[in-house]
Image (cartoon, rainbow, N blue to C red; front, side):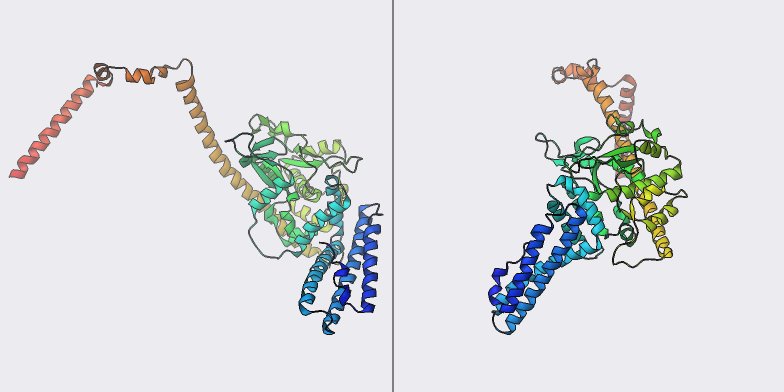
Length: 476
């Protein structure tokens, strides 16, 4: 939203107020045009943005006070005053919301800017995209409402450019799976990286942001239903590659199979799980999932694998470089360690924790270890419930799928051996053959055998005798 022009209401201000307004207006414009352009890093850019917001707020506060003074002195008509006040107040509210987000969530804004910058030409473009989402999250009404999966699915497909119209008429709409390519849109799901069932105060505390983040399309991935299930069950994990020296190159991600014994099982069609092991996710644009969500999923999978004794994949990941190649302040350290103790007896490697966590946010009251332990226990319960729910869904899905598979095999076998096999004997029952036989031939084809004919005659006679007996009884 652009700033209201000073010239629009300058005529209503007293001379001292007008001078002050011009001075503040000049300061904020200079700050916006020069300070931000000279920023050599994203961190400096955000500091400059915060300063610009401060000056904007001083300017709007001065204008509102000056207009109130002008109204009292009957310098400005009431109707004109209401219109200008509404415009300035709306702009002031936007700046205040942005200022609060920058103060409280600067770490996360900076991380998101790092993620989104390669897909946009300037830091300003990336900032505009990030701040809108952050402000909407921070100001969303806290109402308990059902998660809109349909809207989330649509947003994820749009974000990754993963949807297209049918190639030819009569064909279904297609969606792009990041690991298997274009598929029938009904087969591709918007997989949640952080499960939507974890929407809670505990999760918000762990990430340091509101639970509206679960609606963020960067918390989703377009994947086949079977791959989505494997991600939720920890059968696969997604790991980042070491960042390129080029800041304009987006992060690339690789699928790792956590249990090699699953390698020969089919994913879909002729694709096996071993074919996806080590395969890079194919993105159609520069948009990427948020690293903090995938880091959370990585940690949960790591701990579960340690419990099950299937953590050999960790050595394979470490053999290609660091365990997690894109460090950042993703999760709250104390809460993460408390959650890890609840999930597994195994400790998280210090480099995996220290390089990817934060200690405390600004303007936040610390919580006791007992509170964090209770929250971790609650979050662990939610995770267990999510896995159990997923198993129930997959069990029902595979039960139906197995029945349909058996039906399809029977139908295809019958279709081949009875209809389309070149040597099938059923070919004799052609329309021509059916229409040609004479009455004598049809009688010969449909006639009964001797035993059936005798039985039929006997039953017919018995029916006639019973009918006759019934008539005689009626006459008595």
